[in-house]
Length: 260
Figure 1: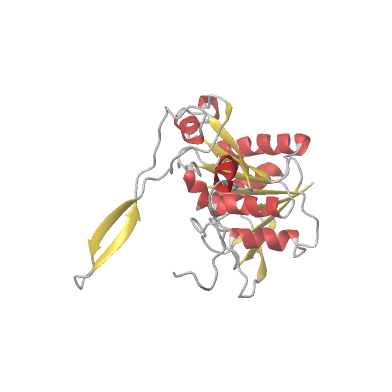
Figure 2: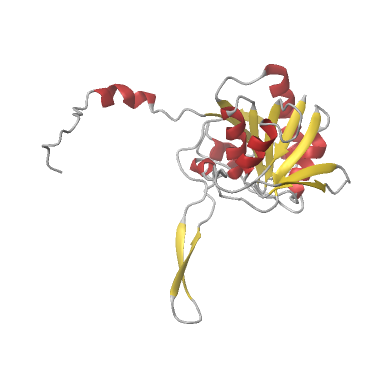
């Protein structure tokens, strides 16, 4: 089992290192991660510039690789042969904050797992809200458990797992909960106004996390209630429930005589 580990926080992230060390129990681990932070970059992919691959070392002295590309680029490089070995599973993380609700659309971590699935390889994204007193070890152990299950059982086509771990010690976690993506963003955007030294206005997008324990059965609710959230996400974004209604719309191909 050859496992590719990547992230969107960069190759120096302690969360990446903790995950790499933990997953050595289930396979041959190769780390290929960006050389800088790509948080909130979404599913960026490099097409017009060269990608460079460099060798580096993890803190324990083991070899890893880094690139100037995005998290999705890391997966493409790994799966198309830059590592000169077949990859059987891609695991992205451990992200330094949770990826919940609509926020998964911005996540480079989730994008890396998504890119793997698009390319026909199982993908898992693992995230937690980092706390210095707790560290990444609990999330790494949770990640190991999820990976073991995926290795044993597999995943359906076009499906990835989005795993979020509550910020508590292992003995305070209430268990695993299989969840749906919440029907809201995790971070509630707020536009903050400032003045620069020249009196010109500039803006900063802020906003506090939305933690609602009443969102039962959803990822945000699970984390708020100290459960490990495991959400199966599909690549196909078709709104199947609207297809029939949309077929009833009276679309007509315009001709040259139609006025705009």
